[in-house]
Structure formats: C-alpha cells, structure tokens
Amino acid sequence: MKTAARRFPPLLIALAATLLAAFLVMLAPLSASAHDALLASSPEADGTVETLPGELTLTFSNKLIDGAGATEVVVTDAAGTTVADGPATVNGAIVTQPLAEQGEAGVYHVVWKVVSSDGHPTSGEFSFTVSTSTVVAPPETSSPAPTEETGTTPETTAASPAPTEAPAEGDAVGPWLLAIVGGLVVVGVVVVFFSRRGNRGAGRAQGSDDASPEPSDDLTAR
Image (cartoon, rainbow, N blue to C red; front, side, top):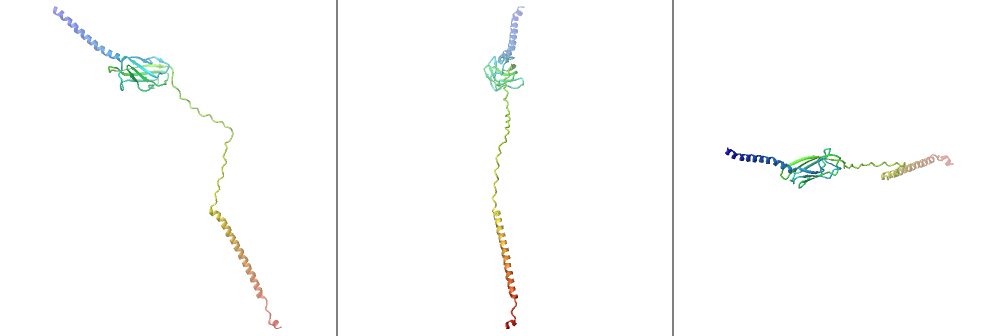
C-alpha cells in the first residue's frame, strides 16, 4: 500500500504535463491568428461616409511582410466596378490603397489579403456606404445656333468675259488670198472680154475695106 501511494504522485505529474502540452499546441494557432487580425479601417467596416475618399487604410495588429504579391486590396462599387487607383502600399502594420477621385453613391465592397510578420497569409472582407455621388457628368456639346436669313441675296461676282482667241495664221491669210485670186480672175475676164471685142472690131473694119468695089477698066479708060 505504501508503494502504490508513493507511485501515485508521479502519475499525476505526467498527466498534468501531457494536458499542458496539448493546451499549448491548441493555443499556438490562436496566437498566430491574432497577429493577422484587422484592428481598424478608414472608412470603417459597415460605416457610412459622405463621399468616396481618396484612399482606404487598413490597420493590423502586427507589422506585415511586404513583397511582390504579398498585399492586395480590391475595392468595388455597387455595380462591381473597381475604384482602386494603383497598387496598395504597406508601411509597417498599415496598408494604404489609393481610390479614384469620383464615385457613385452606394455600397462599396472591400476584399483584402496580407502576409503577417510570422509569414502566414490572411485575408478578409467588409463593406462601407457612400451617401453622395461625386461623379461629374461630361459637358454637353451645344450645336451652333442657326444664322438668321437677312433676305439679301449674296453678291454674285460678275463673270469675266472669256478671252477671245486670236485667229490662227492660216485663218487670217485665207480671206486675203481668196480676195486677191478673185480680183485677178475678174481682171483677167475683163482683159479677155475687151481684147476679144477689139479683135472683133478690127476684123469688121478690115472686112469692109475688102468688100469695096474696085474701079472698072471702063471708068479708067474714060
């Protein structure tokens, strides 16, 4: 009986040590997950702001690991359009995401992903509401007003006369050549006419002389 009583305390000690080890193993993930917790945001989760701010900030409980692809923040409006303006930046435990200058009123959804200092990635999401739109409508292009008709007809420029073409050299010589030839023909006809007429008159005179009777011998003898 004394031997059993002496061995009983070591068994209790071993059982207590086993329970403590199991408790520490279960507590380790909880402490690691606490490093990845999001403490605050601006705009805050489920909060309402008047207009869309120029940036979104996320504050975590521990310093984050920064690197290519380590941090990502997506912000979309009610229509699902992304309003993020450039990549997010990390400064210790604070993540800053630039936003567009204009935004419609409505509910905005935020999805974030970061890597904590112990190397464990963590992510989460939340929403906030914008009450006033800041979208500026494009200016309307006004069509030019029609000009009033004054009733006056536009001045017409007098058509300048078409330049007369100078007659060709052949055209200028042709009429003069015809006139000269015609004159020569007329002169020739007149000359021929009068020459024939003169010849006829001379012939007639000669014929009359030949036809006069010669004196007979009887008259000579007398």
